[in-house]
Amino acid sequence: MNLPTKITFSRIIIIILMIIGLSVLGLLTSNGTLVVPTLGSTNINLVYFIVFIIFVVASFTDFLDGYLARKNNQVTALGKFLDPVADKLLINSMIIFLCVPNAISVGQINISVWCAIIFVARDIVVDALRFIAAQRNIVIAANIFGKMKTVFQMVAISFVLLNGWPFSYFDANWMVGLHITDFIVYIATAISLLSGVIYVVQNRKVFLQK
Image 1 (cartoon, rainbow, N blue to C red):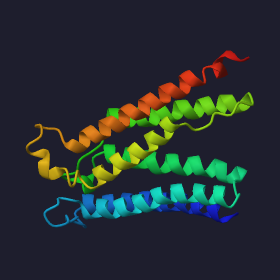
Image 2 (image 1 turned 30 degrees about the horizontal axis):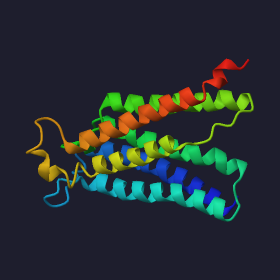
Image 3 (image 1 turned 135 degrees about the vertical axis):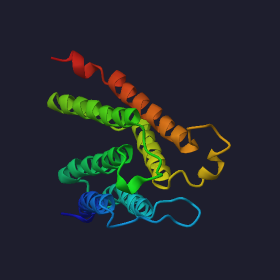
Image 4 (image 1 turned 30 degrees about the vertical axis):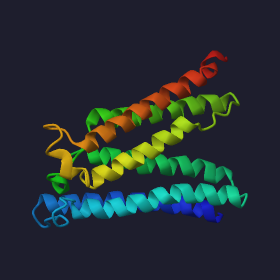
């Protein structure tokens, strides 16, 4: 296992440990054993801030492993398999976690369930398309829209983890019941949906072949 693949694999381990840790903290918070503080006047949940730091580091390794693999000519079949798995696990686990209210998330901005459904459904459709294409010896390369989708998802998740900060200072003068961060999530959702449609339209030949 080369260095880029080790980085990818470590990202998967970090994500799994983070999910387990959040589950344990949720149980401790729900029974009153633990009270989660906020960071000063920012209204940023301390647990979510720690998750934010881990998420940023994990997101950076997404760039790092690919860069090292291409630079050192260490692209492998295992790396090609693990990298998208790690990406989907990182993004979708955070999206699902942030759309389900829990004991830790009192006063926390959440991702809309409908946005979460679109995010996850888009990935399922594109992955299914890639699977069918692979069976027919067709390679579906990543395009700029897929990369934009990932970037906007990471940005949206980061702001939700920070509970809308620094936009939270302007939310009171914005729109009742909505946050600026909500619109960032909606933009990421629209780009995700658009990229999925583009993938299907551009590769519709996959469905026409027998």
